[in-house]
Length: 108
Image 1 (cartoon, rainbow, N blue to C red):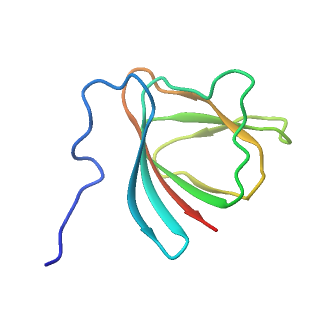
Image 2 (image 1 turned 135 degrees about the vertical axis):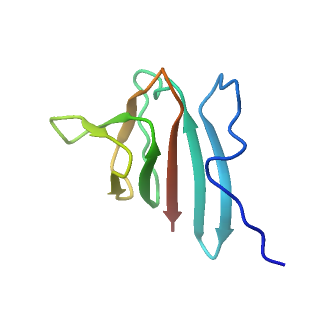
């Protein structure tokens, strides 16, 4: 039986930490929902992944910083980008007034 789910349902009321929820994992591909609310990558920490990641901002706002880019990238709903493997980056800011919802696709 096919099951219908919704990316905007089941959002937690309290969000003490950024939440990473796997939606699908199959054949080296992982799709996840990420929920943020005023969260950011800890100071001095960078993501440096061994895989490519494609992210789509569905709701809210966020700012990403890339180690080799002079300017931060501000994302609004509908914005997406490809983060190549080993492209060091961090989440500098997410909207503290409401939940920011991301869809991320990782593949190895």
